[in-house]
Image 1 (cartoon, rainbow, N blue to C red):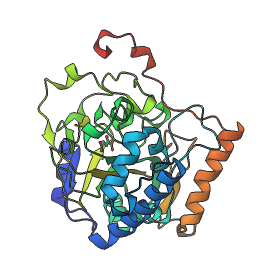
Image 2: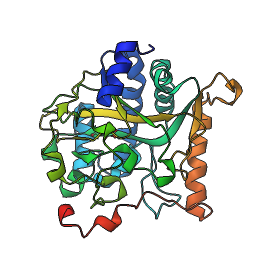
Image 3: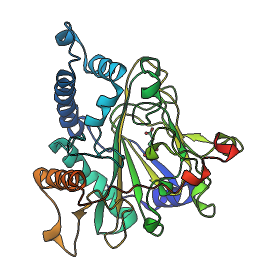
Image 4: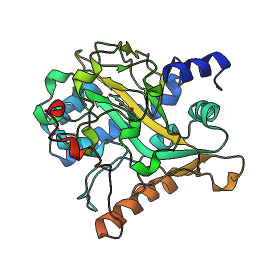
Amino acid sequence: MQLDAAQLEAFHRDGFLVLEDVLDEASRKPLFDEYAQLVNDVAKARELVTENWDSMSFEDRFTHLVANDPDAYEYLDISLPLKNDLTEESGMHAGPAVFHLLTHPALLDIAESILGPEVVSNPVQHARIKPPESALNAAGQGNSNMARTGWHQDAAVVLENAEASPILTVWVAMTDATPEMGCMQAIPGSHRWAGLGKHCPGRAGVGELFIPPSLIEEHPRVDLAVRAGGVVLLNKNTWHGAGPNLTENIRWSFDLRFQPPQYPTGRECFPEFLARSTANPHDVVTSPAHWRSKWEEARHSIGRGDTKAVFNARWESNGEDPLCA
Ligand SMILES: O=C(O)CCC(=O)C(=O)O
C-alpha cells in the first residue's frame, strides 16, 4: 500500500502517521507462533517453567518469565543488547518470522513511499512486549522494551555520523495499543524544531536516554493509539514516548527502521541489509538464514574483540544537569 498524497502531507506536517489495518491476522500469526515457542524455550533454559505451564496462556507465560527474570528479555528482543561488554553468549531473537516482518511487502511499500525505491533495513530495531506494569520489578520497569518509554527523538539514539541519514521508524502493532496500554504519544510538528532537544543519559543503559519531563509538559501531546495490525510512522526528529501498560493484557509492538542505502545507519556495529531495490535487485537479502547469519557474525566479531560495540554515548555529559536529576 503506497501512501497517498494526503497521508504523505500529514506525515510531513505532524512528524507521525497512524495507519490502521496494514498487516492482517495471517501476516502476524507466524510471529505469534514463533514467540510462543521462544517464550517456552527461554523459560525452560532459565528454569522458570511452572507446574501449570501447559494450561497457561502466552500472555501469562511471558509475564511470569519477565516478572521473575527481567534479564531474560534479552533473548526476545530482535537486536543484540546495547551493551559495550557484549559477548558471544549475548542473546537476541533473529527468527524467520521476524525476517518476514522486516521484509513484508506492505511495510516496504510504505517505506518506499517516503524513502524512494532503494530501502535498507537499519539495525536499530526492537520487540516491545509489555506486560501489565504492576507485574514488573524495578529492573523490569527500567527497561523500555517491557515498560514505559522515556520521551526521546530517534535521531538521538544513533551515532552522530547518522545526522543526515533519513531514517524512518515503522512501528508495528501486534496487539491493540490504547492509551491505557501505554500507546506511544508524540508532540505534533516537533520534528520541525531546530536540531536535537536536550536528552539525559539513560539510567539503565544507553537505550534508556530521555528528554527531561519538564521540557515535555509545556507542549500539547497526542496519543498514537492504533489497533492490532496497524502501523505508526515516525520522523526521526519527532519527540515521542510511551506510558506504562496499566491494563491486565500485554501490549506488543515491533519498531523497525528503514533508510536509503547511501547513508550511515548510526549503529555500524550491527548489520544493515538491502530490503528492496530496483537498482541492485540481486543484492536484496531474501533469506531468513542469511539475515540471521549477519547478526551471528556481528556477535561473534564483537565477542572476539574484532569489532567494537559502539553506541551513542553523546548524552553522558548531561548526567550532572539538574534537568536530568
Ligand atoms: O513502543 C514504545 O514504547 C516506544 C517505541 C519508540 O520509542 C520507538 O520506536 O522509537
